Length: 435
Image 1: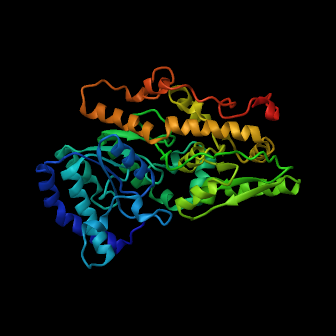
Image 2: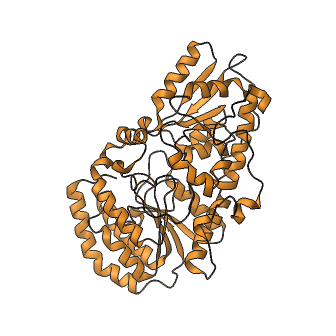
Image 3: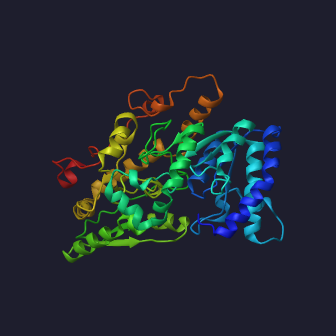
C-alpha cells in the first residue's frame, strides 16, 4: 500500500497522540478478550480463515484497511473507516480508524493474525511499537506472509522468480532494507510465523506447510460433468486469470495457445483480468482446465479455486529448492497439479487438450485434495493446533503438523490418488490408457 509522504506524516502524528491511549488499552484490556482478528491487508484468505474459525465455535472477525476492486464490501466484517462514522475526509477517517482498530485489537483480541507488515500501525513510522503493546495486553500475534511483506529480492534463489517480481512489483525491490528490518523484528517477536514457499531470507517458520490458504468448498462447487472434447472433435477451453502478467508468465501461455491453434488443435484461451471473484467462479464452471502460473514455483488461491471447482490445474512446481522440504515433511506429494514451465508449457497444454480422461481424473483428484488440505475443515485443524500450542498444556508438534508419516490429520483420510509423480506425468504415459 502506497501512502503519500504528507499523509504518512499526518498519520504518524495522530499515532503519537494515541500512544497514551494504547498504553491504557493494553494495561486494562476489555473483559471479553476473546476475539480472533484477521487483517489488515485485504486478501480474500482472511475471509475464509475467519469463517472457518467461526464455524469451529470461535469468535472471529476480519478487519481490513480497505478492499480490492475484485472483492465485495461484504467479504470482510470491518474496515478502519467503520470505527469513525463521522462526516470527515476518508483519509482522516482511515488514519483515525487505524488507531482505533489497534485499540480494538488490544482490548478484544485473543489472537491477531497479520503479516510481516504487522497490524494496523505496520506501515507507519511507529510500526515497531506493535509487539510491545500486544505483549503488554496478552494478545498473541501470528504472522502469515503474503508476498510484498516477505520477499527479499536479493535473497530469492530462483532468478526467474526474481524477474517475475521485478516485472510486476518493482517498487518492493527499492524497499528491501525496510523489509529486512521488519522481518527480523517479527521473527524475534511474533508468537507464530507461517511463510510457505516464501522462505528465502527467513530464518524461522513454525508450521512446515507450503500454503495455509483455503477456500470455502461449499461455495466453490465441483463440475457435474467433464467434456469429452480432445481438440479434434470439439474445442477445449483453458482458463488463465492473472493478477499480474509478468509474475504469472502470461505471455508464454498466450504464445503456446496460439502455436497450438496454428497447428490445428481446437483450444481456446479464456483470459480473465480484474474481474470480481464471483464472476471467476461462474467462468470456471464452463472451462476444461486452469493454467495458473508458470514462473513462480507453487500455487495459491486461484489454483485452489480451480481445484475446488473440479478443474485440473497446471502451475510451476519445478524448483526442488522450494518443493522438496514440503514433499518430505508436508502434503505436497498428494497435490495433483501438473508442473508447467515456459519450457514445457506447449506440450502440457497439448496433453491436457488431447486427453479428456486425464482431465477428468486430475480434476476429481483436485477436488479431493482441496477438500482435504485447503478447506475450512483443514483450516480449523491448522489454526486449532496453533491455538492449542499457544494456550493449552497440550504438546503440539507444529513443525511436523502435516508430516506424511507422523500427522494424525494426514492419515485420518485416504491419500489423494492421481497419476502424477512429483507433479509430472510418468514417462510411460500414453494418453487415456494411464487413466
